[in-house]
Image (cartoon, rainbow, N blue to C red; front, top):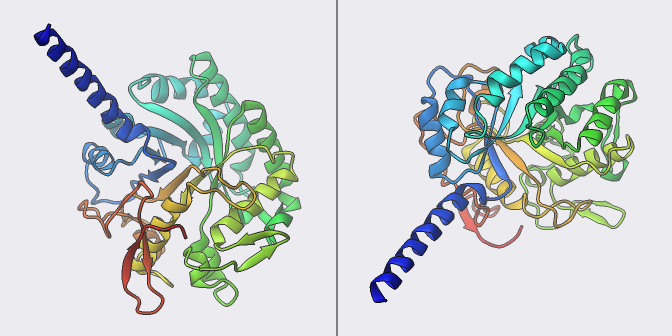
Length: 361
């Protein structure tokens, strides 16, 4: 019986090892990273996917159905948010074109690629000629997924927080009245489809737009005490205040129950005001840590978050837009990365030196 027992134990250990290996990617937490491709010096997609796996990054966002990236993602177990570029929205407002798009870019790669969301448009302005195509394209892609037996893939669109007219205090968050014609039907669609709102939230721009009122420490998660009180809710960082103002605005548009996924957030490391590697490292690593904790309006509810971006992209403008990467194009990390959220990178206010902290902020 001993050889049989030994063989059984060996097989069991092999299965456990395989299970744990898969969990390293799938169970790595609520944070993903956006894979932007607007650079002429970026590594091939196969090396990018390998870099995600090396750093145990569980989720990826791409902005168009790049087939090189999709091929490289086959069998990786990385969960994917895939985008429909704004320039394709008019085409997908035709149901036949939406069906073709889903067959070509989703069905052809499923289940080898683990699609999670389809972002139909990114920060489409209500004032643009494209705005009228967002909702029809969303509906058509949603219906095409259902016809293909892929209703588990959720359809949404990525909005930006400039659509909020009132944001302070957070509980008074409200969308601009002149944008409600655009936003309300999208919110109702998301509610019916049981899909999340995708939101791009950047404390960086809020701070640099009003540095006299919004301190760098508040924007970087570095404040050690409450900065803003809103009734009995205390805000120690700007990200929470911005997200809760969006949640309040959704509530005033009958969407207060909707989940919010942060489809972009980040901090540039060069090229503009307050752009240093230390500041970028502080924001990103504190954000990764904080995503597990929720906000004052939704405490203890993890926030699914996508950090922008994987690489510096030299074809973008203005200058600071080139430097949002966690990595240089040669795949060198800008600072010691840890996507588990177990450590956070902070800058000591006393001596401006970089240290790791393991306690909550």
